[in-house]
Image 1 (spheres, rainbow, N blue to C red):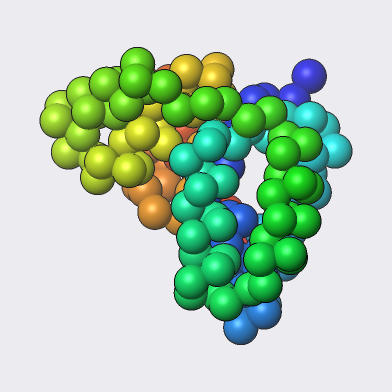
Image 2: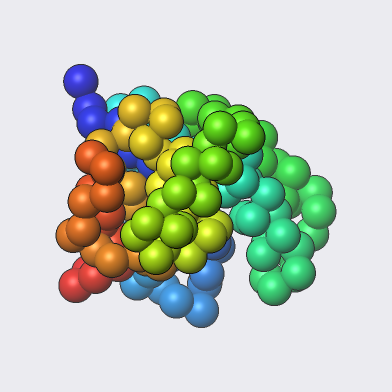
Length: 139
């Protein structure tokens, strides 16, 4: 069985980034792999952040964003709860992780993920059993 892997917002954003073809290719390949082996996990926070960036920064049409949301909903999606937010606050305070990144880490941990794919955090570092991997490093 494949290792449960958490997908950070930047993976979804780069999947849309035609101006960054290498990162777009890597993001799409990763999403395809995680979908096919049913190991990908997202959170409601990641989906909200993706929609915000897709609409505001990437200027994608709402209908397209809705279709992508329908697609991403096929991954295991966990709800960000007050308990996850508290765990994120603890990580933010103890490990000096940025608050929203800390909630992503806490979500990954709560979901039983061993891997977290993200460009935003210290690649190679393991935080509370979750190893951070930058899928764009040395593509």
